[in-house]
Image (cartoon, rainbow, N blue to C red; front, side):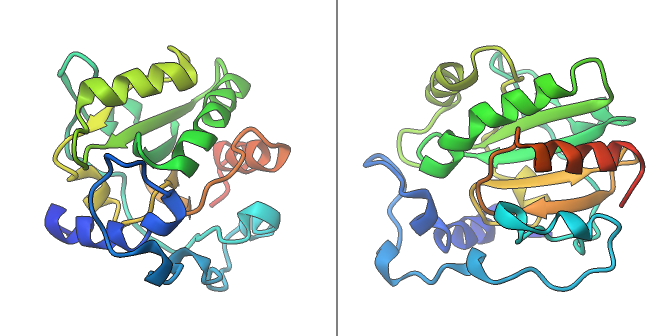
Length: 209
């Protein structure tokens, strides 16, 4: 499993895409950092491979992981795990308040949840609690500006959850089937309420993987 210190190092490789604000953690000059997320996704025999077009061309279907099991906190500091979403399609989004693309795509994630209202789909952003001045309270304030109460607020203050997901990218979105198995991930921002995104999640809900 990737440890928090190592995952923080991985995160530095993706700060160019995130364009962090002035209070973000110091990192290598973005101009000198290669765009690690730009590499095309490998070929796959997934039933979902047809969705790998347009802004979803970098979908990766070949990371065979279970949903993270570590705890994260809500706005009051109470602990939760993804076990509460077992039996649902889980769309887990990793974001940070200082990550421009994360902030930009967040409202579309709220609209994705609304598209599946009453169905077994849970869109769950968990904030990456890393950076100078970043706290649960500052991140919550930003989150409320973006989506109000349309999505649940969760915070990964120890950066353990995203380590278990084995990604240093921001934003990153993993989709898990009803058993908790990962079936797709995207490590670049997207419009998650687009017809293509909704069809992708519906396909997972229908049992495709």
